Length: 502
Figure 1 (cartoon, one colour):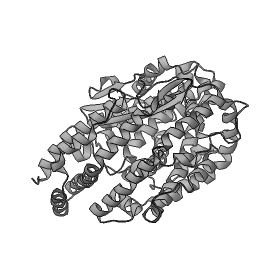
Figure 2 (spheres, rainbow, N blue to C red; figure 1 turned 90 degrees about the vertical axis):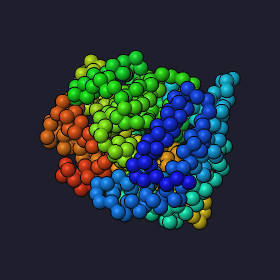
Figure 3 (cartoon, helix red, strand yellow; figure 1 turned 180 degrees about the vertical axis):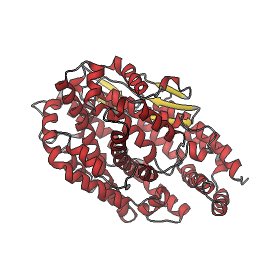
Figure 4 (cartoon, rainbow, N blue to C red; figure 1 turned 135 degrees about the vertical axis):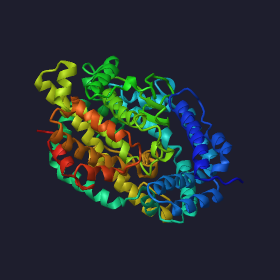
């Protein structure tokens, strides 16, 4: 089996990454009914061998910075590829089974993704709850295979990396400790709870109506996040135009970025979760949303625009390691969180939707409530996932603590049966939370350096474009240092969370 040098490995890895990304895109947007990732992995089997990994490890040891970090990311990708190659067929089978799964509803057999999307637009509280139960029942039917795949992945990763403890293994990959992050966000959640509690009651009453349960189930979260009672103001047909105008005010012209390809269509098999797939940045970056009406369409577009502009704005001369690869996703999430937080600015609501000052303040508070709810959910999710993976080598993974933690943090009941479907790979929850902290720090910096109306000033876009050019090279902790903050300083975040109900 051929062993490539660093340049040769990088060139072939780029071709592999493009093929896998385009396959994932086609399945995610509903253009394909089945996933064929396993076939792609098989075609590039020569990339992911123990011999190739040993060669990359040696090259990493011999390199100096910044080349050492670039090679380290190639080495980490090779490690992941060895594991993926062993599991690709089973992961394809699970993905295809989920695509084929149907939820019986109103005499129809809905694809599970269509049923999940319908939860955001079903206006009747009781029907929404019942549909959520039906979706959960179908999804939970795949939990045994999910758990089996997690167990086999754990064993393979332990073998390939030489680190048997899952949390330590992930910390080595990210280059950060996870429990201090949990401690920081837990403190922020506790400190902001007195402001959140009345805000939660006020907005759940308005969004769910008088018939709501004291503790609604997560079946209602898509409806809540959509802020559906405000749909008449935040119509589906205006979302793209308003978001593009918002970005242009910052000096960020998304339409002029030739590398960004948008997919905003509504298809039955299209995932309701918006995303960006950076197949070959800066040349090919896909921005994917599924608009359904409501403020969340605008937030989702701005969020994904942050990712898309970041990847499409990187220097084309950067190596693959700094254009596409990263140790985690915390850096790119900073830019997404910053842009979607514009919906929390009353002035934005007044400017684009002709609202009175009072209406704009109220609707901005609704957006802050939605964001706060999500932050609290993810802070609890990280705590659960750290416990889950700490126990995993001995108990194989259980839902213990999932429902209790998330429900206590949000006031929304998250059924235990959802604990595996809700688990993103690689402690992505920690990446989100690092970005939550950092984006609050960055907003504080922008208010100080640019002004309170940073969200419509081209100086903000100029600062972001400078950061985008670096691609994925810096860490989010490095960004904190540049703007004068300790990475775990949650003071700006707490100030925003506690100002929500003011």
